[in-house]
Length: 261
Length: 197
Image (cartoon, rainbow over all chains, first blue to last red; front, side):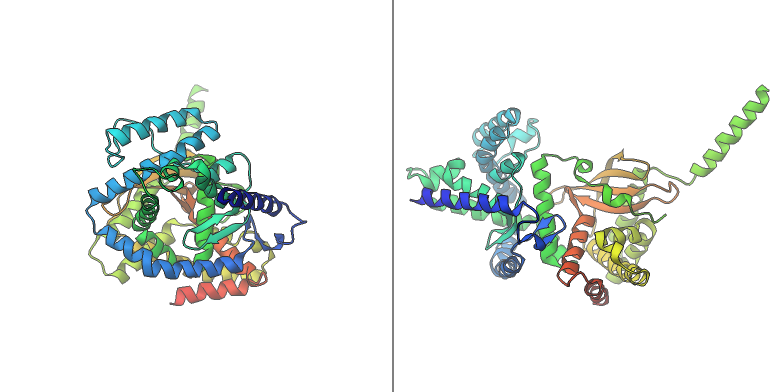
């Protein structure tokens, strides 16, 4: 029943996403802000405010408390969480046809889980594996040509798009091996708590690494919501392009018209 | 005849050398700017003194007008001359305050310039790394340098971990203008309020 509901929800969202990508016939297109499709801006802004309050009360204090822990403890936690994320990255490398990266990441996972003690130590990096790049089902849909659709702000989880939300639902439908052995299936070794604890831990780890940059951004933005939206969409576009080459992602066209000398 | 051509070649070389004697490469320009900022941030100045020094660095090295026009996007074509003049002034005040305020938070940033890539005669991208500290990992920073005038290089954008600050600002401004029926006045008010606080 749960899988049926999830499948129906995913299908509905993908159909809506296709409509949101068309121009002219979609009565939501007048909400377009240049390239950004913020179809539900009113609701998104309200959810964003709610998330800010929640962050101030729960996540930021937790992140600050986490920062008190010694640096090696935080580094080890971050490494272990990254190691778990390879269980989602590897199938997505395969779906994107990048068999070389799938092989490298499989090797990385094996090395770090065994020699690296469940991923606490990033042995793979030390022995010369290439830098790790996370992949997820939202990125895979993007690589396959599915448009990002409308921008959405999810309660608690924060910024996303229709495509990325659909992608993350795939994790709950067998796409995440860690979810499968903890929540989806009743194994003797792991429980639901393990999954949710690691997810919460990943959120706090991310927040702890970005306390100053978020504060700085909020203090210096005249529309903090729009700044976060822009940064999120730029980040996703860059990850889908699988490119660290800045010049490939930048559109020089807008700059060429501006002559001040 | 040979002496004549030698003299001509010498004159051409001398003239081009004079033109280039004050021009520097984009990566050297970025490193010297970064060093200047780091000296300000690492010195024993009060916060107000730091902010004023950083504003001075921004005026010297950043194409504030260019960034301002870029941030307006397509809206700049619908502004009157008077609105553009007012916008330039208000944007400059906003930018200097925002720029210095963002940087003043860093106490001792260490930035290493790694390489440069010439896009065309107007732009060079300089790649650098903000060295990691105990509280944050290393950060890659690219600088879009406007090189049209080799004697007066100017920074037009910072791309931090692949995220363009200029583009973020452009989309922020667009959001404000579009939320107010396409009127620039709302943006001007927001910028003035920010600069005044």
